[in-house]
Length: 257
Length: 271
Image (cartoon, each protein chain N blue to C red):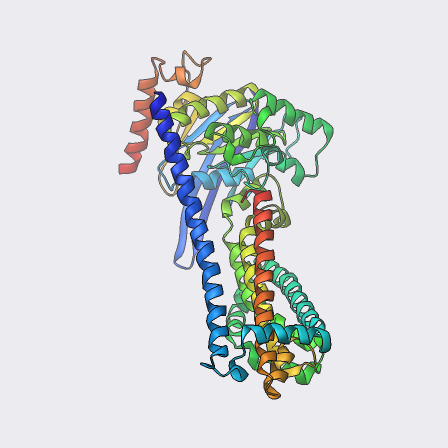
């Protein structure tokens, strides 16, 4: 499979008058097309910073990011970024929320809007297009936020702990749901999570970061015998417990070091 | 099952009834207080407990109002004050929106101007009125500028504070969707701070009225502020008190109109 993204020796520091705080150091990894990559690490280790760098919201201080687009170009690809909360605007209807990205890019063309309509129908939100966000359930809000992201047809999706604001039960269902939809859409995904079970059940590869300054501790490929099934079923795979223990060991070991 | 259902309904009905009763009581007491005040005022004047030359009375106020309307162009005085107040109010809204937008756009500018805004906001604006008269003469312009000066700086500070209270993650969302800073302003900051803009407007209309009356005291030949000063100078206290009561009604109407507008807009945007 072709690499879609390559990070080489990414470094980043935060600066204040009290001095410099190294957040990321020498981060290198690759992401293949269609691959689901989970990034785990202790809280405050700079995972979100890394995602912001990949998204192009901030520039790295050291290192380079290479994109190999499917068409062979090295341009910045279209990236969709899902934040921790859905941030649907209360003053807009669901429909005007999911078309926000198109509105910003002045791309409200009939084809794009037809694609949005298809997603709304597919994700069961068709009847809610003129409703306000606060009339949706937590899971439906996440679906609406996903449509808002997918409307711009990104090649790479970045998810920054996108389910952490949901209660546990909803979270299990929504994370499985959203990831199934993203896989069905054939997108590449990088997800940040602090939930190890979630990482194992969703991802093809887990990248474990150390505490500050974050370096790549381990890259762990995940091959579950039940992979084709839903992420909920994946938690019953025989390898699951073993992988969980290894992941836990890697994370806690470096914390002591 | 059925009895339980019924009992719940009555509880709900009871709640609604209690709620209505409360509101009826509040309205009735308000009205009663008003009538009692008018009655006491009228009686005190008639029985000579107070000197109605100084304190007037409701009947004298009504008489004076009718007389003023027919002979002294009361309506044109009211019109002038209304016009000047609305003009200052609209200019305050426009100017403070522009200023707050600039402050939001440039953090450096907002930090540079902060102490000036604080000082100008705390300054008693009536102290500036004599200067406005010297600079601008004694026309409507001076009065409108006086009205603006009272409301403007507080309004800028409130609008800017409202802009800053918008969730920064919502602004990040705009950037993740490829938007620019101006998109962040028009799609998030402005609609997101609408409730604060509306509540500040309600305060502004009152302040504009204060400024306009101060201006009319000092530099006008027309308007309710002029009538009050003129009336006190010629010892026609009926005229003074009538004008004050008309001012009360104007302030009430302004506030109500803005309250209804606020309610409608909030309902429309479901805020």
